[in-house]
Length: 447
Image (cartoon, rainbow, N blue to C red):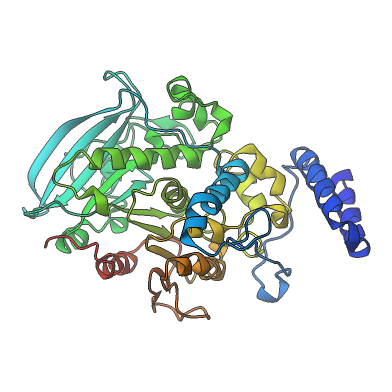
């Protein structure tokens, strides 16, 4: 038994005997956890739990309980005090800071085709420069818009493998970086073979036919998804321009920042109704979409697809992936302090239902997959359920049900949820539900 584990077990025993000194004990435990976690961060954690009966009991923090113990009962109190307080807790303990818009940022449209997708859509390719001049760090944006008489709503989100993979069109600019099987980055190999390889995740014809546009960029343009990705990503290349230390934010923070820069461009495009931008993300990019949506309230709807631990799923519900799993496999996704909660999610001052509550009063969609137990579908449902009290402040209905729905049966009003058949992925079924949700919330585009 390691010294850290021994200390932890001892303190757990003390907790059952000394209820009258709970506040002192909690402070001391927090100190011990922070000290010990760094020495044992690579120790093997407990086996993954997929047994509902084996989930330890837990109590969720109340998003409407202020730091002084008073209940938040009005929208004014929520928006002026409680919401900023919760956002600060996530910033300090989980994701880190997000800097503002960089000076000198500008856009260059590098290609326009007015007759794509059988003549029904316009494709634009835009370079977003994060500073003055064309030597500044940049991101390549791919934009598809239906031909319409008025500005249209757009689904905006990052992609995993490069813009050229979402459609088999040789005119699409390839990704700057492609991660090879040996883990190295390449800007030349396997590009043609990967064209259109993720088209099933971006059903452009379906989206365009319903009157919506799509805006996407490769998340590697912001920071490669690797423990050393920060060395060549914007957390290093932009640290002076953004006046932020590399360790003050995370890879998820960098990717989230990039989503806001996409919104900056959309606001400049007369063919886009940027007041109706719908933010979407899958898996780790679902975590990213939630954090971006919490920080940037310009996004009209936020969609989390299979985002799991560190995204929509409750951290205190020990099922599937855990905080320790995240920080062991992906130490760059979150800030260093998050590692101090590897084995003690109960010590976190927040849980993910509070992140979802930061989206209010904007519509929120959380989606799971039946075979994606690693992401804890029930934990995602319960997180959405426990965000309802904040939406109720705005007199908005949430899920409207108390029990998890059957597969392929979406539920909810301003908060909506579904669990579909299948694996960890984003599918045509998912997109059809998101489009229906957007239309039900009056985010309707010309068709």
